[in-house]
Length: 182
Image (cartoon, rainbow, N blue to C red; front, top):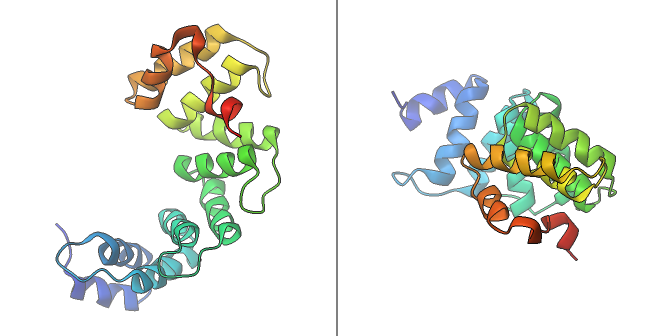
């Protein structure tokens, strides 16, 4: 059962991190209340500071997109990394992406990117499984192994990752995104 805003506010004001995260979500996505990005940011930050990994990711997203706060890729990365260190695949993917592309003040580091994408894949992330397929398909940071790459792409597609299905449809003409990005 979904709690009322009043009930969530009561719990959140008592320091309940889950309630704080839920309030942040509601201030961004609940059609029954006025959207308030600053309030969402405030509640995400309160929950994230208590170590709630899902709130750390949401806070990172606020910093990345400038929702309720001035955008800051470096602060987004800081919060994604906190969630990643707690084993959250979504955060591990984001950290891996930052290292892969060298974005937002993070030095490009293929080995670190692979480490975080592999961790996310081990956590069952279809997106990360596709990323691993890309590493093997291209021989980036791992020995070139198109068969292993294709198998990982197939597995990712079987989990519902549409980008993996699109990649497979290109056959041998497939070029992983990180190999074609400028």
